[in-house]
Image: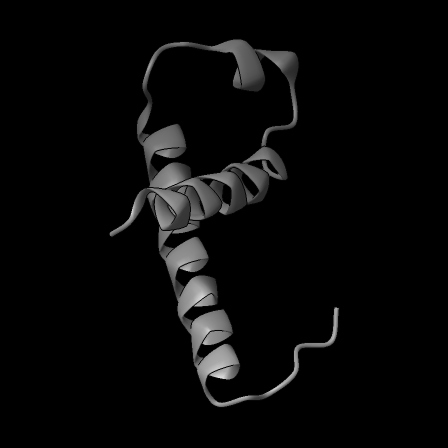
Length: 66
């Protein structure tokens, strides 16, 4: 996986996780927890899935409506 793709997936995953962090304790807690680990894993999976769909649409010549 190239570095640019990793960055995009990281940014997308961070946005997806941030939507579920409700308190400053959630945001600034440096300790790992099963909840936060699960959220990050799920967000990375969704980000990768989204990237595959974007790449597929771009390869097929389909235009993305943004």
